Image 1: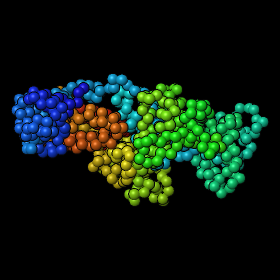
Image 2: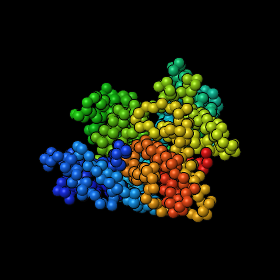
Image 3: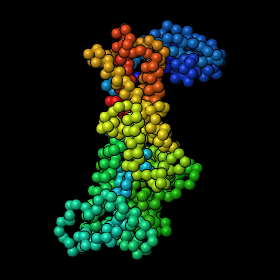
Image 4: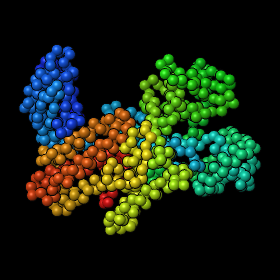
Length: 588
């Protein structure tokens, strides 16, 4: 469905052309002075030089041509040459009527769908998720949903860290604690136990203990390095123990991600890239892309246009060991082989930008991807506390994600119980939904690349630009719709009428922007665009609600028109919060 602003621009462009001017001057935008007009065209001033004519005279010609056009309620030429426009209520109602009849709410699907892989999550096995993992999961999940809504085939990959010294450290510590386990008996040729020799809680204690020991004890570190090498060489017992680590960790990660309403299509790991590394390095040497420098294998990726130094991309260290760049490049090979993506998006900390600049350039230079494959870096900033430093517990430690969610849910539960007499079990369920909106909207309403302050008091408020405010608006609409159906005993009406007052028209104008916002959010990979839209839409809805007696209105036709408009608003809001990754309760 054509965007409402494009329809307006087309009419204005036609007026320019009819008056003998280039149609391109008819581009129209939303007015930043809604007290003066709804839309504004500045093309008359841009045309001044080419046509050697006063902009106000050009503007007056265009306005005269637009007079009588059924799309516009008014058109006015204002010095020094602005063209101020207000659209007709009938035109607006007609547009929203078509939008409401469309199951996609006027959002067009891609004519040539892409296969897009989104790399987000990035958790490490054997380590608990903490608030530092929050942004990648929340932003990546929303971007995945936005891309799918645009009609693309999207594959979300968690890309777990499961390879390297951390595995050797865990194996070594387990061996020190339980040396008689069959995994360490090289003569053992039976079946290893199906049950892991540790729980997730024990595993999360084992790794930091082993890490600290390795810093203080050189012999212990050497043992861990040897265990890492033996694991990577395929020693049977070590591989079996590593599989236990994966199984226990992934089960816990899935539970934690599920509490955030985050789901991955692939649970690929760094280890999945290992089989490609040797052949990749040999290929890069054979084709002349890579060369030896002090024993290390590197690829130059600097370009003449660089304004800052871009170091070479190291493929293998002097001892033959792989690095993160190696693993990321090998992962690209794996993705190309199995999924042939048109685009790969990496949702990671913005401080990794140089790393991915090297990886992307190396992948292109060495032709690991076709020329038309897009590699995108979506870097996010830090989630900080009120002190401006990375968000921590009250005790000063790194906050586990489970604890943050529990604290937010408890805060929401208290607020719900204070404001209403509610069933405790239902209140708990509602608190979980509202708590999730608090966390997700609090994050996504900020531009991803910027650091932001996670203010619990602000984000849990039912007023202002918060998740609970958005949900409260949706619940308010649901309540009105239920009351209407209970009184009328009918299905919800669908006919949207021309606006009866200014607050209703303001609501309708906000709704008409929906498909434009969706397109912008996809093109920019920017969930904050959706947040800004639904905040303004919620404000418009609440102004209309407070100024209009909807259910008590005597004119049944008018009442039905308002109900149809409210239902469309609900559908748009619920579509948007689903794209952000949360849902609304029935009551609050």
